[in-house]
Length: 383
Image (cartoon, rainbow, N blue to C red; front, top):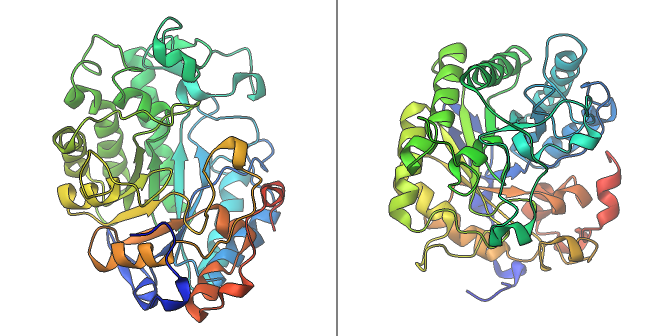
């Protein structure tokens, strides 16, 4: 397909058909992608977030996936990300959920532990070292270090692993109690679960390191314990990626579909109901084949899959171009084609939805001229 398909010639009606995610019926195929906002104080979401999420639900997003919610203080990216602990933090999320549900939307909590990717200098307790599979995310003498390395932390002991699994499960149970429709585990972009997945960042020699199957063990045990706590009917999703942070955008952590299958099969068996295949450009193919990462995930697991990455954007997805205004109607034809051919089930829309809370409604109406180009200033508010 060409890089841009003329949206006015595309029938987008398939985007507005329902889809089932582990027993949760979502009204349409448009998901608000998780986006870090940094508006929380002492773990409590800002009051302005209630309207922020409600506007996206009434604006046409069938599914809201929240910004990353810290599973613990040591897992929090910074002191300004929200938590889900009982009390004021969970109460604020309950208000968000009530408003989203009142306008017919569904909302799922993204649970986030950043591991060695934690921004320690901006954490609630900067004196406490970050934790991860090993002390260093990447050795300073590896060629990959040129793409960015995180400061050293502390290698997780078995007690740390057990405690972290418990924290994830407690957060999922808190999400269920607060009225969320499901949860998504953030296992992408070089954060904690992904640090266990990736051979370069997981250099352990115990049962949580080694070959790819062993490197999935940490995630499998998290999923199993969450499933035990929340029961069989509460949806569990998992976001994963090939690329890693800080700047490892070209990393191909999995070499071929066979490796992807080795990774995804135990996760699916453990209880994952849907996948969120995070890519920088959702249409780019993987493994020198005709399928994207979302397409391969769907083929291997049979589970519903969200495709995401530069939806509604025409410019590059990198820091140097974050302030470039682009036409947000770009690429809708490609989105429709991928859903029609069964290569994905939903589309995650991020930055385009920051500038257009009603992105879904405008697309449904074919009112592309009314779509506002993304502007980096949108990141600075809860509009």
